[in-house]
Length: 304
Image 1 (cartoon, rainbow, N blue to C red):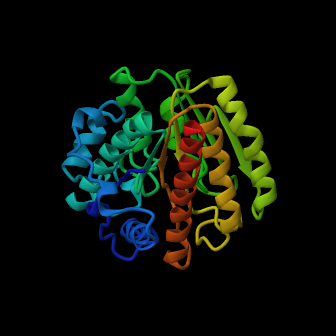
Image 2 (spheres, rainbow, N blue to C red):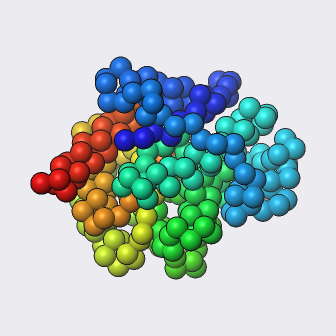
Image 3 (cartoon, rainbow, N blue to C red):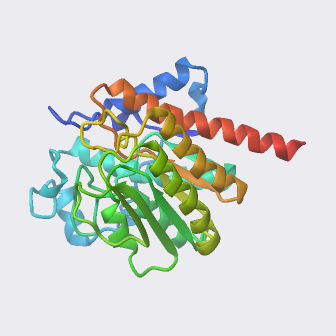
């Protein structure tokens, strides 16, 4: 399985809850655990600003690219410098590449991306560029897909993604998240807002019912899976209290249903803010491991 990754994703945010070091640590763990070789990691190409314009407005991009601290950029809750902007632009290019790999190889895995709070006209919640939307729009523009679904299992609702695709029947947006928490909610095609301290059982039951219905009713040609690590019980920003074992089951539900229905799936990481960064790394690593195992199992059945 190929992993899309760039060293440039690790950026200096100063004292900040968002641990961009996780990207490098995930790669190192995949190598150390012999689940990947160096040649399995693919560097995304330099981003094409025209691809970003498929989603984001001229006014917002003008502020962002010129590093202007305005009402459109300030809501990111991040510093604003070229290293950071470049990383977000590159992540959008990385998600485009991830989704194209998924179309060819069943699963594409981005060690990055999932910046679902970015709106067309402004940044929000650690997100400058909505790479999910850029990736989908790029593939639609090139005629590679017509219909997609976003299955967002981050702790927080994917409000930017929901807003971008509202009233667009070609893209089904689904978000399962902690309800009494940031952000101000937008309307996805299907939202499941969960109470604090929900835990594994209720969460997984909702997901077991939802994913097959999404596939059956919308019939997407591609699924973008936002595999946030932040529903974890020791996350600093949330109270859903899922265990690592529960998060593995979450991954299996999404990936198994996609593969069983011959739907390519592109995985992006989204958030993760555990007190111990190595917990976040392990959760994302486990998602990659689930993908590898299920892809191997799928190919084994094809060869029988």
